[in-house]
Length: 349
Image (cartoon, rainbow, N blue to C red):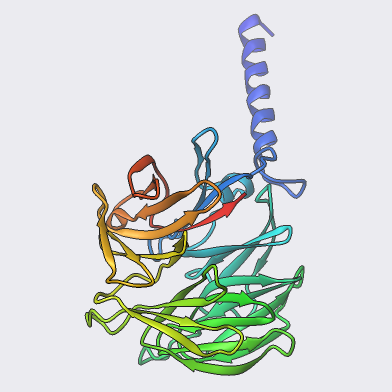
Protein backbone atom coordinates (compact mmCIF):
# COMPACT_ATOMS: atom_id res chain seq x y z
CA UNK A 1 0.00 0.00 0.00
CA UNK A 2 1.55 3.32 -1.08
CA UNK A 3 1.40 6.60 0.82
CA UNK A 4 -1.58 7.91 -1.22
CA UNK A 5 -3.58 4.72 -0.65
CA UNK A 6 -2.86 4.87 3.08
CA UNK A 7 -4.04 8.48 3.32
CA UNK A 8 -7.17 7.65 1.31
CA UNK A 9 -7.99 4.69 3.57
CA UNK A 10 -7.55 6.79 6.71
CA UNK A 11 -9.77 9.55 5.26
CA UNK A 12 -12.56 7.08 4.42
CA UNK A 13 -12.29 5.43 7.83
CA UNK A 14 -12.41 8.79 9.62
CA UNK A 15 -15.46 9.94 7.65
CA UNK A 16 -17.24 6.64 8.37
CA UNK A 17 -16.60 7.02 12.10
CA UNK A 18 -17.94 10.60 11.94
CA UNK A 19 -21.17 9.44 10.25
CA UNK A 20 -21.57 6.65 12.79
CA UNK A 21 -21.09 9.12 15.62
CA UNK A 22 -23.88 11.33 14.24
CA UNK A 23 -26.46 8.57 13.83
CA UNK A 24 -29.61 8.63 15.95
CA UNK A 25 -29.74 5.13 17.42
CA UNK A 26 -31.41 3.88 20.56
CA UNK A 27 -28.54 5.00 22.76
CA UNK A 28 -29.46 8.67 22.93
CA UNK A 29 -30.27 11.90 21.11
CA UNK A 30 -28.77 12.95 17.80
CA UNK A 31 -26.97 16.02 19.11
CA UNK A 32 -25.08 16.44 22.39
CA UNK A 33 -27.23 17.29 25.40
CA UNK A 34 -28.10 20.98 25.42
CA UNK A 35 -29.77 22.71 28.35
CA UNK A 36 -32.66 24.65 26.83
CA UNK A 37 -33.08 26.99 29.81
CA UNK A 38 -33.47 29.77 30.57
CA UNK A 39 -34.93 31.19 27.40
CA UNK A 40 -37.91 31.29 25.06
CA UNK A 41 -39.42 28.52 22.94
CA UNK A 42 -41.01 29.67 19.68
CA UNK A 43 -43.77 27.50 18.18
CA UNK A 44 -43.53 27.58 14.38
CA UNK A 45 -46.71 26.21 12.84
CA UNK A 46 -45.37 25.45 9.37
CA UNK A 47 -47.30 25.10 6.12
CA UNK A 48 -50.31 22.79 6.16
CA UNK A 49 -49.47 19.43 4.61
CA UNK A 50 -45.76 20.17 4.33
CA UNK A 51 -44.61 18.66 7.63
CA UNK A 52 -42.32 21.64 8.27
CA UNK A 53 -43.57 22.77 11.67
CA UNK A 54 -40.80 23.30 14.19
CA UNK A 55 -39.73 24.64 17.57
CA UNK A 56 -37.04 27.32 17.84
CA UNK A 57 -35.26 28.40 21.03
CA UNK A 58 -34.01 31.91 21.79
CA UNK A 59 -31.28 32.52 24.39
CA UNK A 60 -31.88 36.08 25.70
CA UNK A 61 -28.51 36.37 27.42
CA UNK A 62 -26.48 35.58 24.29
CA UNK A 63 -29.19 36.48 21.72
CA UNK A 64 -28.45 33.18 19.97
CA UNK A 65 -31.26 31.30 18.19
CA UNK A 66 -31.38 27.50 17.91
CA UNK A 67 -33.65 26.50 15.02
CA UNK A 68 -35.74 23.32 14.67
CA UNK A 69 -34.50 21.87 17.94
CA UNK A 70 -36.70 18.75 17.86
CA UNK A 71 -35.24 17.75 14.50
CA UNK A 72 -31.72 18.55 15.71
CA UNK A 73 -32.07 16.46 18.85
CA UNK A 74 -34.16 13.55 17.60
CA UNK A 75 -33.30 13.30 13.92
CA UNK A 76 -36.87 13.53 12.61
CA UNK A 77 -39.38 16.29 11.85
CA UNK A 78 -41.49 17.80 14.63
CA UNK A 79 -44.71 17.34 12.69
CA UNK A 80 -47.28 18.87 10.38
CA UNK A 81 -48.88 22.08 11.71
CA UNK A 82 -47.19 22.40 15.09
CA UNK A 83 -50.02 24.10 16.92
CA UNK A 84 -48.78 24.60 20.48
CA UNK A 85 -46.66 23.36 23.36
CA UNK A 86 -47.01 23.14 27.13
CA UNK A 87 -44.62 22.49 30.03
CA UNK A 88 -45.51 20.17 32.90
CA UNK A 89 -43.06 18.84 35.48
CA UNK A 90 -40.04 17.33 33.74
CA UNK A 91 -41.80 17.05 30.37
CA UNK A 92 -42.72 19.33 27.49
CA UNK A 93 -45.64 18.44 25.23
CA UNK A 94 -45.60 19.53 21.58
CA UNK A 95 -48.97 19.33 19.79
CA UNK A 96 -48.90 18.74 16.01
CA UNK A 97 -52.42 19.25 14.66
CA UNK A 98 -51.88 17.98 11.11
CA UNK A 99 -49.92 14.93 12.23
CA UNK A 100 -52.41 14.01 14.99
CA UNK A 101 -49.54 13.62 17.43
CA UNK A 102 -48.32 14.97 20.75
CA UNK A 103 -44.58 14.65 21.31
CA UNK A 104 -43.52 14.23 24.93
CA UNK A 105 -39.93 15.43 25.32
CA UNK A 106 -37.56 15.79 28.24
CA UNK A 107 -37.53 19.24 29.72
CA UNK A 108 -34.03 20.66 29.31
CA UNK A 109 -32.80 18.34 26.54
CA UNK A 110 -35.79 18.05 24.17
CA UNK A 111 -35.06 14.36 23.79
CA UNK A 112 -38.31 12.58 22.80
CA UNK A 113 -39.60 10.06 25.32
CA UNK A 114 -42.92 9.21 23.63
CA UNK A 115 -45.14 10.07 20.69
CA UNK A 116 -48.79 10.12 21.74
CA UNK A 117 -51.22 9.18 18.96
CA UNK A 118 -54.00 6.97 20.34
CA UNK A 119 -57.41 8.52 19.66
CA UNK A 120 -56.14 11.98 18.76
CA UNK A 121 -58.23 13.79 16.14
CA UNK A 122 -57.09 17.29 15.15
CA UNK A 123 -55.41 18.05 18.49
CA UNK A 124 -54.99 21.74 19.28
CA UNK A 125 -53.68 22.65 22.73
CA UNK A 126 -52.37 20.98 25.88
CA UNK A 127 -52.49 21.86 29.56
CA UNK A 128 -50.87 20.05 32.47
CA UNK A 129 -51.94 19.43 36.05
CA UNK A 130 -50.17 17.21 38.56
CA UNK A 131 -49.06 14.11 36.61
CA UNK A 132 -51.58 14.47 33.79
CA UNK A 133 -51.70 16.23 30.44
CA UNK A 134 -54.99 17.34 28.89
CA UNK A 135 -55.25 17.70 25.10
CA UNK A 136 -58.05 19.53 23.28
CA UNK A 137 -59.27 17.94 20.03
CA UNK A 138 -61.54 19.36 17.37
CA UNK A 139 -62.43 15.82 16.40
CA UNK A 140 -63.02 14.48 12.89
CA UNK A 141 -64.90 16.13 10.02
CA UNK A 142 -67.58 14.26 8.10
CA UNK A 143 -68.15 14.37 4.32
CA UNK A 144 -69.98 17.70 4.74
CA UNK A 145 -67.06 19.18 6.69
CA UNK A 146 -69.04 19.12 9.90
CA UNK A 147 -67.43 18.08 13.19
CA UNK A 148 -68.79 14.87 14.67
CA UNK A 149 -67.59 15.37 18.27
CA UNK A 150 -64.96 17.56 19.95
CA UNK A 151 -63.33 16.41 23.16
CA UNK A 152 -60.53 16.69 25.69
CA UNK A 153 -58.24 13.71 26.15
CA UNK A 154 -56.61 12.88 29.49
CA UNK A 155 -53.17 11.24 29.54
CA UNK A 156 -51.30 9.96 32.59
CA UNK A 157 -47.59 10.76 32.57
CA UNK A 158 -45.74 7.97 30.80
CA UNK A 159 -48.90 6.24 29.55
CA UNK A 160 -49.21 4.89 26.00
CA UNK A 161 -52.99 5.41 25.84
CA UNK A 162 -55.39 8.05 27.20
CA UNK A 163 -57.08 7.37 30.52
CA UNK A 164 -60.24 9.34 29.72
CA UNK A 165 -62.07 11.26 26.99
CA UNK A 166 -64.30 14.19 27.95
CA UNK A 167 -66.84 15.32 25.32
CA UNK A 168 -67.19 19.08 24.81
CA UNK A 169 -68.82 21.51 22.39
CA UNK A 170 -67.60 21.99 18.81
CA UNK A 171 -64.09 23.18 18.07
CA UNK A 172 -62.48 22.76 21.47
CA UNK A 173 -59.39 24.96 21.41
CA UNK A 174 -57.51 26.64 24.24
CA UNK A 175 -57.22 25.16 27.73
CA UNK A 176 -56.60 26.80 31.11
CA UNK A 177 -56.23 25.12 34.51
CA UNK A 178 -57.50 27.19 37.43
CA UNK A 179 -57.37 25.37 40.76
CA UNK A 180 -59.06 22.01 40.29
CA UNK A 181 -60.96 23.11 37.18
CA UNK A 182 -60.08 22.97 33.49
CA UNK A 183 -61.61 25.64 31.24
CA UNK A 184 -61.91 24.64 27.56
CA UNK A 185 -62.93 27.21 24.95
CA UNK A 186 -65.10 25.84 22.14
CA UNK A 187 -64.13 28.02 19.20
CA UNK A 188 -66.85 26.93 16.75
CA UNK A 189 -69.54 27.95 19.25
CA UNK A 190 -70.07 30.61 21.92
CA UNK A 191 -69.28 28.38 24.90
CA UNK A 192 -66.58 27.43 27.37
CA UNK A 193 -66.73 23.99 29.00
CA UNK A 194 -65.79 23.79 32.68
CA UNK A 195 -64.32 20.43 33.70
CA UNK A 196 -63.86 19.21 37.27
CA UNK A 197 -60.35 17.72 37.36
CA UNK A 198 -61.27 15.46 40.27
CA UNK A 199 -64.14 13.73 38.47
CA UNK A 200 -63.01 14.57 34.90
CA UNK A 201 -66.55 15.54 33.97
CA UNK A 202 -68.06 18.72 32.52
CA UNK A 203 -69.77 20.52 35.39
CA UNK A 204 -70.87 23.63 33.51
CA UNK A 205 -71.09 25.06 30.00
CA UNK A 206 -70.79 28.85 30.00
CA UNK A 207 -72.33 30.88 27.18
CA UNK A 208 -70.06 33.81 26.27
CA UNK A 209 -69.86 35.11 22.69
CA UNK A 210 -69.00 33.71 19.27
CA UNK A 211 -65.52 32.23 18.82
CA UNK A 212 -64.05 31.91 22.34
CA UNK A 213 -60.34 31.14 22.27
CA UNK A 214 -57.26 32.15 24.23
CA UNK A 215 -57.56 32.69 27.98
CA UNK A 216 -55.39 34.44 30.58
CA UNK A 217 -55.65 35.10 34.29
CA UNK A 218 -55.27 38.70 35.45
CA UNK A 219 -53.73 39.89 38.72
CA UNK A 220 -57.09 39.63 40.48
CA UNK A 221 -57.45 35.97 39.52
CA UNK A 222 -60.18 36.58 36.95
CA UNK A 223 -60.26 34.53 33.77
CA UNK A 224 -60.29 36.64 30.60
CA UNK A 225 -61.42 34.97 27.38
CA UNK A 226 -60.98 36.41 23.92
CA UNK A 227 -63.92 35.90 21.56
CA UNK A 228 -62.99 36.48 17.92
CA UNK A 229 -66.60 37.22 16.94
CA UNK A 230 -68.56 36.53 13.77
CA UNK A 231 -66.82 36.37 10.39
CA UNK A 232 -66.03 39.95 9.31
CA UNK A 233 -68.46 41.14 11.95
CA UNK A 234 -65.95 43.48 13.64
CA UNK A 235 -67.52 42.33 16.90
CA UNK A 236 -64.77 40.61 18.87
CA UNK A 237 -64.96 40.82 22.66
CA UNK A 238 -63.13 40.10 25.89
CA UNK A 239 -65.31 38.28 28.42
CA UNK A 240 -64.21 38.18 32.08
CA UNK A 241 -65.25 35.24 34.27
CA UNK A 242 -64.94 34.64 37.98
CA UNK A 243 -63.44 31.11 37.89
CA UNK A 244 -64.87 30.26 41.32
CA UNK A 245 -68.49 31.39 40.95
CA UNK A 246 -68.45 30.92 37.14
CA UNK A 247 -70.22 34.26 36.78
CA UNK A 248 -69.48 36.69 33.94
CA UNK A 249 -68.16 39.85 35.56
CA UNK A 250 -67.26 42.01 32.57
CA UNK A 251 -67.43 42.46 28.78
CA UNK A 252 -65.25 44.65 26.57
CA UNK A 253 -66.33 45.18 22.96
CA UNK A 254 -63.29 45.50 20.67
CA UNK A 255 -64.94 46.81 17.49
CA UNK A 256 -62.79 44.45 15.36
CA UNK A 257 -62.09 40.78 14.76
CA UNK A 258 -59.00 39.93 16.79
CA UNK A 259 -56.74 36.93 16.41
CA UNK A 260 -57.05 34.01 18.81
CA UNK A 261 -54.15 35.37 20.88
CA UNK A 262 -54.24 37.02 24.29
CA UNK A 263 -51.66 38.06 26.85
CA UNK A 264 -51.54 40.29 29.91
CA UNK A 265 -48.88 42.79 30.96
CA UNK A 266 -48.95 45.04 34.00
CA UNK A 267 -52.72 44.70 34.37
CA UNK A 268 -53.51 45.39 30.71
CA UNK A 269 -54.68 42.86 28.13
CA UNK A 270 -53.18 42.66 24.64
CA UNK A 271 -54.17 40.86 21.45
CA UNK A 272 -53.33 41.28 17.75
CA UNK A 273 -55.23 42.13 14.57
CA UNK A 274 -53.48 42.40 11.21
CA UNK A 275 -50.27 44.38 11.66
CA UNK A 276 -51.52 45.92 14.90
CA UNK A 277 -51.22 45.15 18.57
CA UNK A 278 -54.53 45.82 20.33
CA UNK A 279 -54.13 47.30 23.83
CA UNK A 280 -57.20 46.66 25.98
CA UNK A 281 -57.38 48.71 29.15
CA UNK A 282 -60.02 47.96 31.82
CA UNK A 283 -61.66 51.26 30.91
CA UNK A 284 -61.67 53.17 27.67
CA UNK A 285 -61.67 52.15 24.02
CA UNK A 286 -59.13 49.60 22.75
CA UNK A 287 -55.98 51.21 21.38
CA UNK A 288 -54.29 50.04 18.17
CA UNK A 289 -50.49 50.08 18.06
CA UNK A 290 -49.14 49.67 14.53
CA UNK A 291 -45.99 47.54 14.23
CA UNK A 292 -43.83 48.61 11.30
CA UNK A 293 -42.21 46.18 8.93
CA UNK A 294 -44.52 43.22 9.48
CA UNK A 295 -46.73 41.41 6.98
CA UNK A 296 -49.22 40.22 9.58
CA UNK A 297 -48.86 39.49 13.27
CA UNK A 298 -49.53 35.87 14.13
CA UNK A 299 -48.40 35.55 17.74
CA UNK A 300 -47.95 37.70 20.85
CA UNK A 301 -46.87 37.07 24.42
CA UNK A 302 -45.27 38.96 27.29
CA UNK A 303 -42.20 37.92 29.26
CA UNK A 304 -42.90 39.37 32.69
CA UNK A 305 -39.44 38.40 33.95
CA UNK A 306 -37.75 40.70 31.43
CA UNK A 307 -40.55 43.17 30.71
CA UNK A 308 -40.55 42.39 26.99
CA UNK A 309 -43.16 41.58 24.35
CA UNK A 310 -42.57 38.85 21.78
CA UNK A 311 -44.34 39.26 18.43
CA UNK A 312 -44.50 36.67 15.66
CA UNK A 313 -44.74 37.73 12.01
CA UNK A 314 -45.80 34.83 9.77
CA UNK A 315 -44.79 36.80 6.62
CA UNK A 316 -47.73 35.32 4.75
CA UNK A 317 -46.32 31.81 5.25
CA UNK A 318 -44.02 32.52 2.31
CA UNK A 319 -40.82 31.14 3.80
CA UNK A 320 -39.50 31.68 7.30
CA UNK A 321 -41.22 34.02 9.72
CA UNK A 322 -39.76 36.61 12.06
CA UNK A 323 -39.83 37.29 15.78
CA UNK A 324 -39.71 40.86 17.05
CA UNK A 325 -38.84 41.64 20.69
CA UNK A 326 -40.03 45.02 21.97
CA UNK A 327 -40.14 47.01 25.16
CA UNK A 328 -43.44 47.85 26.85
CA UNK A 329 -43.96 50.75 24.42
CA UNK A 330 -43.50 48.38 21.46
CA UNK A 331 -40.19 49.88 20.48
CA UNK A 332 -38.14 47.16 18.80
CA UNK A 333 -35.16 45.83 20.75
CA UNK A 334 -34.27 42.75 18.72
CA UNK A 335 -35.55 40.66 15.81
CA UNK A 336 -34.53 37.38 14.22
CA UNK A 337 -35.64 34.84 11.64
CA UNK A 338 -37.43 31.72 12.82
CA UNK A 339 -39.39 28.83 11.28
CA UNK A 340 -42.54 29.09 9.18
CA UNK A 341 -45.53 30.70 10.90
CA UNK A 342 -44.40 31.62 14.46
CA UNK A 343 -47.65 31.47 16.40
CA UNK A 344 -46.73 31.29 20.08
CA UNK A 345 -44.10 31.57 22.79
CA UNK A 346 -43.35 29.58 25.92
CA UNK A 347 -41.02 31.10 28.51
CA UNK A 348 -38.62 28.77 30.31
CA UNK A 349 -37.30 30.89 33.14
